[in-house]
Structures are given as structure tokens and as C-alpha cells.
Image 1 (cartoon, rainbow, N blue to C red):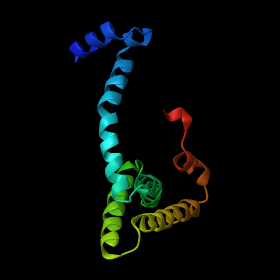
Image 2 (image 1 turned 45 degrees about the horizontal axis):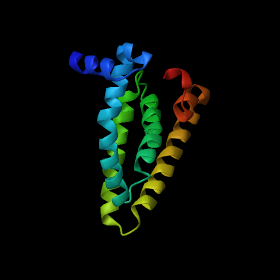
Image 3 (image 1 turned 90 degrees about the horizontal axis):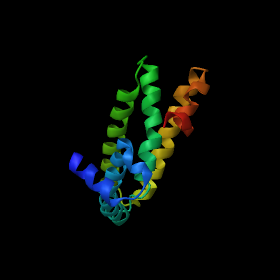
Image 4 (image 1 turned 45 degrees about the vertical axis):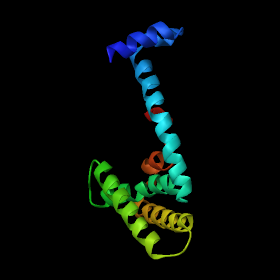
Length: 139
């Protein structure tokens, strides 16, 4: 890794290269960008352009289920629900002749609404707003 850092320091004429976290970010971009290009082509070819958005928004239902069961760290419930969501979506998609994006959007809307109903049932929905729309300070 140090060899890559040394090469970056000699090749790049920018002052930000002296920081290791910036070097790590640049290396991550250089590695991930070609992979995302290939992955994006496969996603569009399989007509699943809406999948990542649906998976991310459906994770709110995982948080709601984790909260319902009294879990302090809802990340595990969120991940389990996302995996179940993806597997169920794949199973339904293979059985129907409907467009994949249609199935994805129906599942996304359904899971998002279930999550909102479960979270609002407790009465204190304001503490979950950061999960719904994001929090700029968490970056």
C-alpha cells in the first residue's frame, strides 16, 4: 500500500495527496468506478434500474421491525429484511410476466408504507426522520 501512496505523491501535483484518507478515497474510486460501469450495464440490461433504490427504502421496514422487537441496534434487522426483500422480489419476478421494474416499484411502495405504519404507531416518529431522509451530519 505504501508503494501506491508513494506513486500517488510523485505523480499527482495536488496538496491533498499528503493526507492518507484522501489517498484511500482516490484508490477506492479508481477501483470501484470500472466495476460500477460493468454492474450498471448488467442492471439496465436486466431491467432492474430501480432495484437499489427499492432495497434502500425498504430497509426502513427492517428498522421498524427491529424497533418493534425492542432491538437497540436495528442494523441486523435492517440487513435481514433487505436480504428477505431481495429474495422475495426475485422469486415473484421469476413467476410473473410483468415488467421487473413494475414488481420492484410495487414491493418498494408496499415495504415503505409498512415501515412507516409500524414506526408511526409508536407515536414518536420524529426520531426516525433521519433514517427516512438522511442526515448530513452522519457523513
